[in-house]
Image 1 (spheres, rainbow, N blue to C red):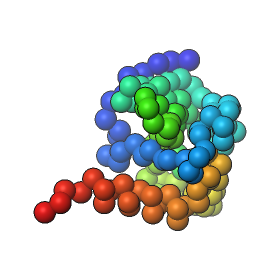
Image 2: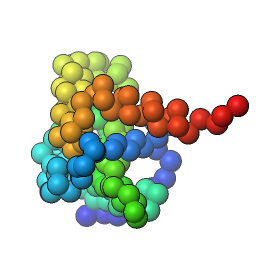
Image 3: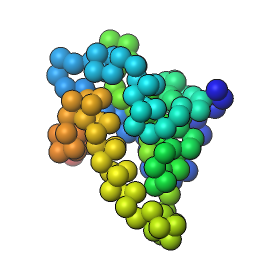
Amino acid sequence: MTKLVYGPLSNGRGMKEYKMRRGEHLDDRMPDLKGSIEEYFGEVTGTEEWNGHELYVVADPDNPVFEKILAGAAEYSGKKDKLAVHFEERPAEEVIAEGNADAAADAVDGKNEFLLEATGRDAKSRRDSLKREVEDDAPDY
């Protein structure tokens, strides 16, 4: 396995962190996080550090839509762990030109199923939670 130190994410989008449902913990929902990542996305080829957290890297994902996937537990002292994930996707034009347009739907389904299993939250619940976090971080004027 290779170990890399986090650099800026190439597509300009940041890492997302997902909370678990109330009263649930990531290690209870996914006791073998590395195994689950491999089951959903392909072989883990190394690790990268991001904000002090060691994340698994899938450098050659099974689905051709993905260029690279980073995923792992973001552990904070005194708080519940969060799931940190970054899906680096290839440009849609490339995927379609290669005849892999159907893979896009599979990619969305795979991401949603993985995140549902890991967090216990469906896509709507995850979006609402992220919106609340952004609102909480907004300055009061």
